[in-house]
Length: 183
Ligand code: AMP
Image (tube, rainbow, N blue to C red):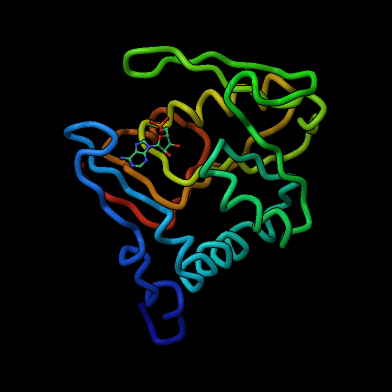
């Protein structure tokens, strides 16, 4: 990277991602982002990067997945001056909802959004803290598009590309700030 463009590459976000082996079960390496939240410079770096990447992309709203996705999307939404659309586990949202079931490794899950929050015909940036298989984001994307919104881009702070999320989320472009290549 040339001298004129050091600010992006010079911040070592990896230092602020805590790696916890065998959590929540044996064999999983858990990439914990609470250590980013506890370091204001790292947290600010993430929100600044989101601003740089999306400020000129005509994004109407940001959607985020419960619960850790909210932590990055909320300051981003406030700084962008755009609506935040919370996507939550079934049964948590009190208003009229749209819902979507999807498969986990050994079970099914269901997520919901307030239908009144989904802006018809508008561009919604879909976000989460970490993208693993992309299964949750794929279901969230369906929820938003079935509600009539467009999802032109997906963002995660951390990406685990070896779990093939790009394929699961194709053709939507996915941006992450840092990638890890193994568990
Ligand atoms: P997925 O649907 O497989 O992309 O992942 C669902 C959620 O699980 C994501 O929102 C992540 O927050 C979380 N997750 C999955 N794998 C990991 C991991 N290795 N470390 C930390 N969080 C994870």
